[in-house]
Image (cartoon, rainbow, N blue to C red; front, side, top):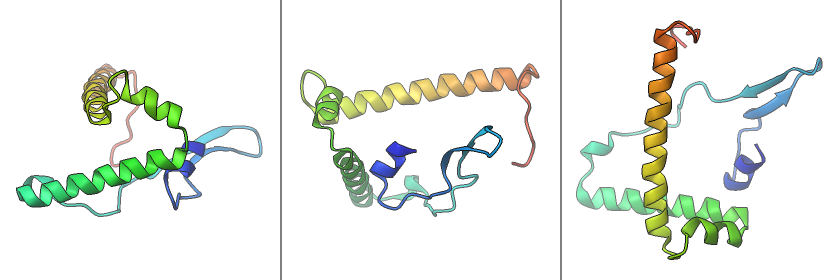
Length: 119
């Protein structure tokens, strides 16, 4: 939650870890993304370039708000090329997310993970 508050200028105060009066801990998150969106596949090349620039600006702004140049330098790796480091991290993240999702589906199919329909 502290990290979220660092990188978001207006964080939702109801998101994050909370402890109840009796000591139980809960993680509260957004159930549905209602911030709006669009079909990225319908963007023209020019619009996609603008969208990419906006995403890059937001990412750079969030890193700048953390105020940790050493972490950014470490993230960029030996080459110091943030673009290459971001690309490598993004690809590794996608691969890990796909492995995690496959493992979750296997647990659900095996009946070891309870699922509540419609949530």
